[in-house]
Image (cartoon, rainbow, N blue to C red; front, side):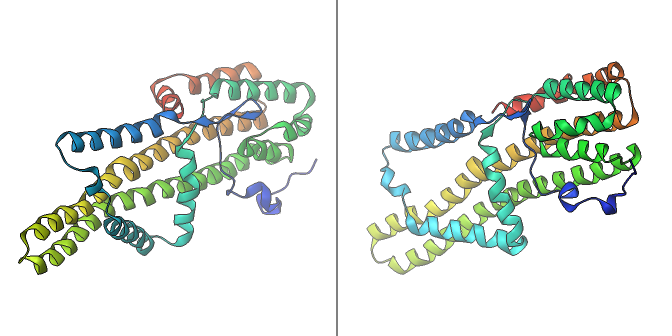
Length: 290
């Protein structure tokens, strides 16, 4: 079968826009990340309870104006730095922060070794009938390239470019949340200053001054709270998932390139075993577990 260069390959094969998800065999594994929601609820409940124990009224924390200032100011600061496409990407990636999945690297390694055995016995073209059953788009595209006769060297170059593009895309999403987390406290201080300016006009009424100062500082509370309880933790969770996806794609890349090179299945099994153990892999598994 004649080999085709990367320029002749269809665009859907090279397109890096389809997100990688953790898959178990041929099925995608997704479940709610309970720890993410539980951690946020625990933090909010603790803050509210502590505020209540001190004898303060929880209604003081509900300031629509402060929420408006912090919310619109933070979003505006993000839009100044990033294009709307990047912000939209970050919002789409947000659901990944609440999706827990099991890192099934052992299952992926088993599938790759099985493909290697099949290619060894019946030729690489025999893998074509396996393509429709593969749920992971990166692995499916990688095997498609191998079946199309792309050389191992060119296959590695194509897959590395695609993997890098996807990693940069996911990293951009975490950077957007980090930027929002850095801007929110400052916007909160700005809201507090605006509130104090208004309070200065009420110096003749002592009671109004006290209530006004309390309300003004709610903006600072909103900014610091949203940044440290939501935005920055979400950025960290997204970054952990970037590492998990990179490890998974690296394993697939090595496996498919080895198949294209005609590596013996036993040798491939030994080569992939390193991806399924070690401190880095265990950290990724714990991150995906919630």
